[in-house]
Length: 179
Ligand SMILES: O=P(O)(O)OC[C@H]1O[C@](O)(CO)[C@@H](O)[C@@H]1O
Image 1: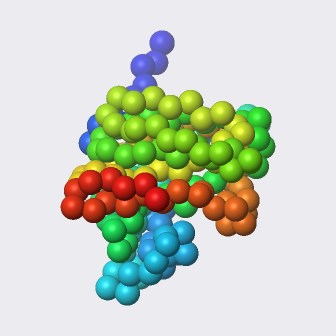
Image 2: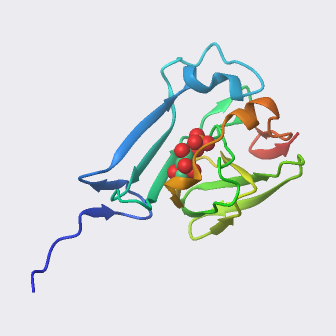
């Protein structure tokens, strides 16, 4: 029997996913400035707000393993966050797990009902397919959150653009304020 080295390596708590098929992109401020309540003209448009790593092995039923790395930036007091999305297929769930840092995972249903869960190293989150989800970095350090989902889920950003998350998370004098 041949013993192979793993194709992928992931230092769960501090590192990123590495391996042959790993895809990676950076989300820049200029690409998502519209998601924040206000614009910050002092922040360079090329500032990296968050990065996403993922891999899959192809096939007819693709399972993805991912990592989102969200930097501790505030935009006029508003905490940095992911764009947020529903799954195109509202039957498809996703699992998130906190690797480092502190944050909130916002869940929003199609009726506009919202709630949040705290995210921290070791936290585990089951996102049912009918919830839009957005990560918010509320801490002073980088927030790292792993994820597992099926490609069949797809990303529906349009619904969020049309009917955004009703709450925003701010940090004032070190205190979290939800408006
Ligand atoms: O697509 P968003 O909302 O910017 O979130 C970042 C990424 O987080 C994930 O949910 C997990 O990595 C991806 O599906 C998504 O692209």
